[in-house]
Image (cartoon, rainbow, N blue to C red; front, side, top):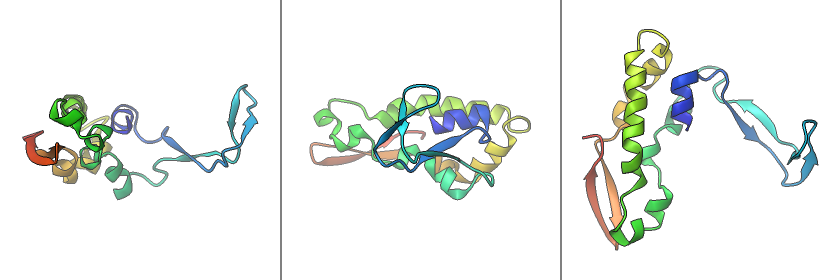
Length: 134
């Protein structure tokens, strides 16, 4: 989601929630929201290494990985995410000299990390290397 929003909108309108005590208070617009919660800009000084690290989704442990891929009968969500992420990169690359120049410049040195060639697929106590972006 982070990569998709960034690719299409830039970082200027990206925020994350901080704080919150678990208690709720009445919102001015109706409904309830956690007390002490605030919205902070995602990249107030531009794109940082931490921000780029957040889009390296293929290096994380997804729910399916933690659950053992249904005993090896299910594909990994990393495989399911490969085509959408490749499509986002195609959009960025096509606009790399225009609207997506900043994002392209930020990720250009990290392509092998953001789009790894392979990943480890673990099921039934066995780990195998599977092709991802080749």
